[in-house]
Length: 99
Image (cartoon, rainbow, N blue to C red; front, side, top):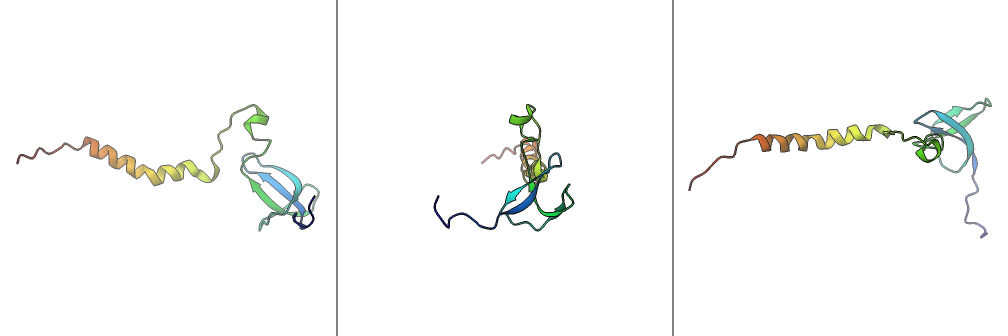
């Protein structure tokens, strides 16, 4: 391996799957402002995951719906006004203008 291309600041961190609250300890260089006390009683930086092997359909054999941070609701709120506008325009009778 080439020298000097890999980070040197690996440290122990806790990864937490937010869909099922599963936590595990591993090494990472990722920065985090959050901390958590792990099962061993020590405090570690916390890295939040949307999905891990405990919730991924490939490993669990079950399809799960994961709506992280309310993305579907945000989409509906953002673009729902266009759907309402389109419906009102469809229902609006067209005016016949004679020239």
